[in-house]
Amino acid sequence: MDKETIIEILSDWNFWKTDRETGIDRDSYLNEMERLAKTGQILAVTGVRRSGKSTLMKQFIKRQIARGRDRKSFLYVNFEEPKFMGLLSLDFLLQVYEAYMEIVKPKEKPFIFLDEVQNVPNWERFARSLHEKKEASVFVSGSTAKLLGAEIGAVLTGRWAEVKIYPLNFREFLTFKGLKTETALDIVSQKLKIKQLLREYLEFGGFPLVALKDEKEDILRRYLDDIVTRDIAARHKIRMPEKLNALVKYYLTNFSSHISYRSIAKFLGLSLDTVERFSSYMAEAYIVFFVPKFSYSLKEQEVNPRMAYGIDLGLINIAGFRFMENLGKLYENAVFLSLIKNGREIYYYKNRGECDFLIRDRRKITAIQVSYQIKENKEREIRGLMECMNVFKLKEGFIITEDKEGEETIDDRKIIYKPLWKWLLM
Image 1 (cartoon, one colour):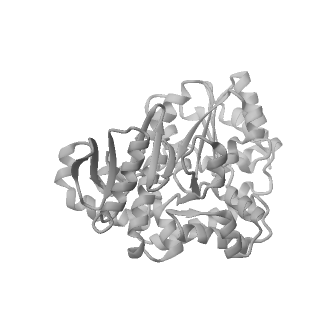
Image 2: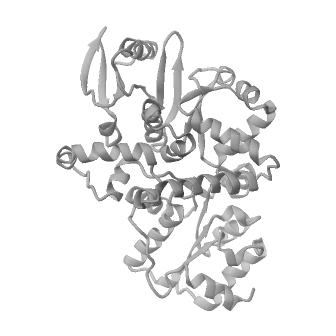
Image 3: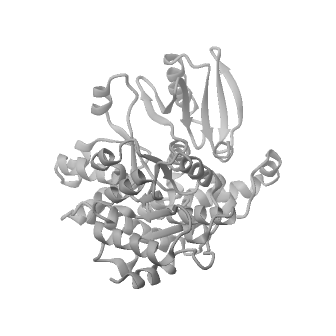
């Protein structure tokens, strides 16, 4: 492909002549991107497909232009552009960069954005070269955790920083729905509307486009298919896609549950090795997370069952079709997502009793129990939480519920009850 054709194709994506529609800003991510960009490192934007990585890159560009940077200083390349299919290689990447420098002619050190860059073999060598020569600031994005895997990490050691992008958290979801929740008065005055929207969030999840469109189920089915076929099956050249689909559905219909690879292998008629490999691929694609039992022994963590949680509540529901029956588990998965998005180290606790989440944040430990309706099961939920608090000498613990709020003290330990909608806005 000649350089003029490359630039003609890229003109439809870039801001060289005009602004592009970039949707609703997600300020927390943009601020983090700006902070890390100042370090001069290669910035990797990772996360599940359709979580908003491409849009955030464009929002970053638009914000920089609004602050006075020249439009031609930004090159954005989407490596899922159909017109580039079949051409993706290190040589083609060099050709794109040369075309940009020769024809667009940026007047200052450029910013290079390489979107879904895992589709280009050896892209990291190109990024390292630009970085070492200080020719450009480099941003890359990808829909797989392997974007910064062992091999790539060896090439880019000490040269990169990462921003993980997730579907909308509940506060962002409310913003997309036109509700401001910046102050306590905002929250209290809109309590009824917030609780109504929580039900929608629990049913359809937080993918940005799903939050904005009416065809939610159709979009979610398409997303699930894209993640499984493109980010897992195609990437890992899986010859048994039906087995992969069965395992994906198993996890998404058994979310917020203990899982055992051996039990799954027996149930689905797969080998243990296949279940382990496929599960690792799913974790790489950010569709499922596996939470270990807390133990100071890594060996004990490995041999005990793990808890499985889904990346998005909408994907869970589209795979299972049992929304009302699963409200308790959806509450638990929602709490998990709020914790993982904040970068917490997450475990579950189990001995005589069980506590849903044991959170380690540096030296601080937090115990959290989730119970949609805490009535007949109150004694069991409190017993598991209290056992966890006693073991780790915690003065307080949390129980997340549908609507119970308040505190009670048992044996000099405080239990704090929070409704889910309020917890997600904390």
